[in-house]
Length: 349
Image (cartoon, rainbow, N blue to C red; front, side, top):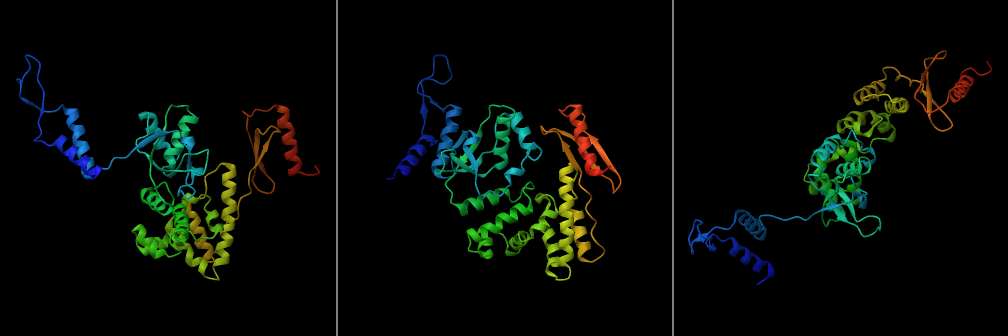
């Protein structure tokens, strides 16, 4: 008989309701000598759990608490780790602070090619970022809860996709890039084979693969890849497929890209995705040129890097200066920077 079989028989005997557990009670306690006693409640529950494991009804997992610094992101992780922030992880941070521990483990696999890391994270980038933030910034004594699995790259891809497919905090475009790489790396470029392995329809997968084909200039027109949705590709694709509309759409995208960059530099809200789509459609229809980008504000700083003021153009003959009065700089540094700005604005005056 195999070891597993012996264990099952042993455990079965331990929890068999016909197998009595007897004890001799103390004097004056209910149940005389020789009477059958039930096992303590905690022991009974433990024996029942062991029986379920032995029978295959329950699978036990080994979880570990580790230093997140010993874990790296899997190179194919479908979430942009560099885009994570306090705002995007606010719900996780709040839960970790209140509970003092991580509730759900991240899925990792062991690595052997680096002396700096023991594991790489397959699922759980936000959990890793949040625990690292609390340890490094708030100096909290909290460790990273992980479940170690033995996975090849294709299995890791499917597991990561299943866990994150329904999450709103991974953008359609991030997911599309992941699918485009996976279809080549794991399925020899055959989308149907990939759809079968993922258990999704061919049509559903093809929409994301089309999204991943958007030209970089169109992607940059949105200012933030997290704002790009699968349906945007369906709207833009016909405009790019027509030789008449494509140049106009690409020109509008270039204007939008520059405008979004100006907003980012100035700390202003981006042009939202709905307006981006509307302007690209308008350009494709030839209903007038897309709006020209506004001149970008120019930031003037001290030699030490302290921001002194922003110079905001308001047309060819006007400009507005926003002073940073709390800047770590002297008035002389403000004067020199202002003089330099005036020399640029009014040369020869």
